[in-house]
Structure formats: structure tokens, C-alpha cells
Image (cartoon, rainbow, N blue to C red):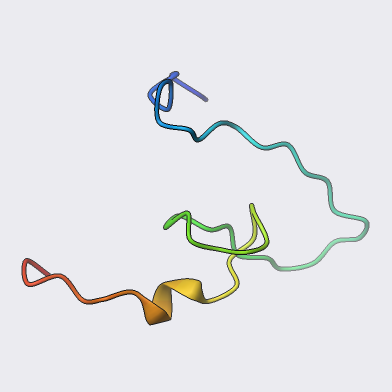
Length: 51
């Protein structure tokens, strides 16, 4: 369902497979050190005044 919006941003689609059925969380903030999986890095980001 990629629409190409990432072009020119330095980000791109990432393919992955799971060895066994398990619950995972995918990173949406793009600060993870283990893409495409969430590692909690977002908890150290500064809070925006707009939030």
C-alpha cells in the first residue's frame, strides 16, 4: 500500500519476515535502532508544545 510519499526523504519501504507467529510493534516514529521494529526510542524524544 505504498504511495511513494517517502521519495526524497531518505526513508524507504523495508521488507521483513517473522520466523514464528508472535506479537510485534512496528516503528512509526523512525527513531528505532532496530527497524522496522519499535524499540521504545520514542520515549526519549522531546515533547512538542503542540501536543
